[in-house]
Each structure stands twice: as structure tokens, then as C-alpha cells.
Image (cartoon, rainbow, N blue to C red; front, side):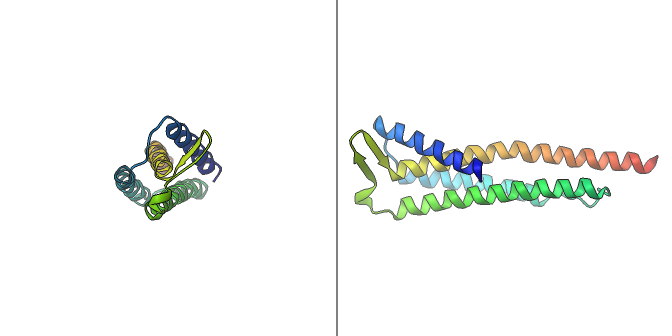
Amino acid sequence: MTKLIIRLIIAVIISLILAAIGVKGNAVVVQTLFTVLGIVFSIAMSLLVSFGLSEILNKGMRQKLRSSICRTRNCLLLDFFVSALFLVVSLLWDSCHLVYEKGWLRIDIMLLAVCVIAISLLYEIFNFRKIHNLHTDIEDAIVKEKIASKS
């Protein structure tokens, strides 16, 4: 949860900087980024649910791997939910009030959604690396179990 809050703060800061230099949010960009995020999310979730731990006989190791899979799954789900929320809010927001200005501070709701979804996409790609490492750990555990059973 802390990592999600940090990513959201980073997205807000980036969107404020981009809005200050004149960059505007765009509904088509938000929808496209979310579509790509949805594809990446689907692939990541399918990889997570395809892990088979039945060959791991060591209960402690199996529990550790299950915990890691559940933690990764929950992070992906929460991240995707927050991105979907930003997508819906940005698309439903009153189009006359998408940009708020107060002195030098400029908040563009659509640009904020673009930044949140883009950072979420980067996070999902980062999670592919974690999922691959988890897959490698599972393979190593299975090999270790097979070697131990032959002895």
C-alpha cells in the first residue's frame, strides 16, 4: 500500500510539472494507456495463476511461494483498480472543469489520469520481472525437491 501511495504522489508531482509547462491531458491517450495496461495486467495475472506448486513437497517452501504469489496478485489487483478509478473519474469529470488553476499551480485531471496510468503500466512491467524471478524460484525448489528425493 505504501508503494502505491508513493507512485500516486510521484504521478501528482509529474502531472503538476507537466501542466505547469503547458502539457494537456487527452482522453484518447488515457484510454489507450489503460487498454495497454489491461493487456499487461491480464498477462501478468494469467502467469500468476498458472504457477503449479503441487510438486513442491516442502510445506514451508510451498507456503513461502504461495505467500509471494498472493502478495504479487494483490498488488497487481490494487494497482489496476486504482488506475481504473482514475480512468473513470477523468472520463466522467465535467469537461468544463478539467483544469483548475490557482496562481502558478495548475491541476489537469486528464493529465493526472495519464500520469497515474502510465506509472501503473511501468509498475506492471516491473512486476513481470518479479513474476519471472518467482517462476525461477519455483523451478529451483522443484529441482531441489527432486534431487533430495533421489538421495
